[in-house]
Length: 165
Image (cartoon, rainbow, N blue to C red; front, side, top):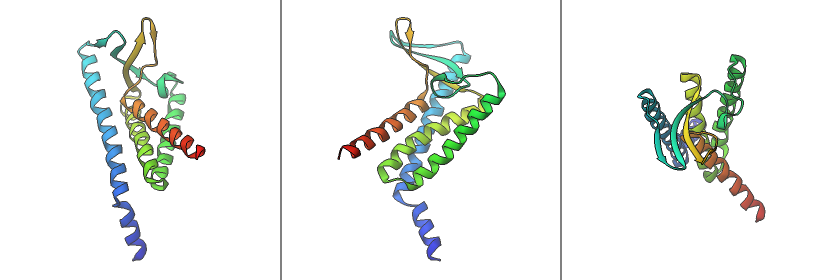
């Protein structure tokens, strides 16, 4: 009985609920943005924001920022399996981390789940944020990539700050 109470207490803790809200919010924000961009693309409309930013749909079959984009099914499925394994590991990290780390891992997890969802549904990830200066274009990315990057940077900064102390 005591073990059951401890499990329920941990599952319904404030930290767990906050982590789940972050994961769900990141996933939802990513989905809404991608659906909006996909619908605009279906209407043959790209979105010009200014001289440095456009929203243009690009289907990415690789990993972050288009790396390892291949048409071969074997590569695609191997990359998807690795991403799924990383998601499982991130879930484990969220359960074991300190509160601050839970927040950072939740940002990464929400983005990873968003991109993994697209890999399963579309067989590619819709990227659409196009930063550029004249003819130099940065890698096209999406909202999930932004949250993954923010989470990773936050973890690195936190670890660097701890090592200085």
